[in-house]
Length: 235
Image (cartoon, rainbow, N blue to C red):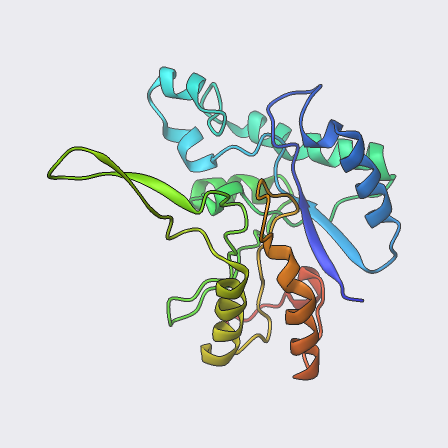
């Protein structure tokens, strides 16, 4: 019984494939959109490009090799397509309009990108909260490999080590509660970033949410949409 904001992306530079063409996702979007006042939807761009890299990458080989880069440098028209396609597809699926808020993939931006989207009607870019104590509420739930390979600088051999970006459920709970305890605003106005999908087979991080939500409610917090906490203060 909480309210949330979900930012929508097709996650593919295609008009026939991607997350907004998967039947299960379409059914879920319709269901979420029918929950009056529980869920609001923002724009996460159609192709999920890294905008900063897509503006300035000089290597055509890299552009063609990596899906997170546009094949051609982004311009005003291409960026307009990135948000308009999401709006159109969301309207087609749900019959409703997106809020004029957006979050860029990977949090990758610069002033040129922000100015361009502002001219296109999106003047509110939504980031996640971070604290002066170097705590971040960007939850790394998309990291699925608990171990990574590292090349030993002396022997040149590969060795398997713990992936420092792989968070367990226990670590995630600790990070969330540490933020609430240490930040000067605690969790007031805080924006937590999580994702609606994961490649993890075990210890999926969304399972921490019931305990976290219950504990926060006991402390007097309520969970609201992004537009409910937007203001003109530079907190």
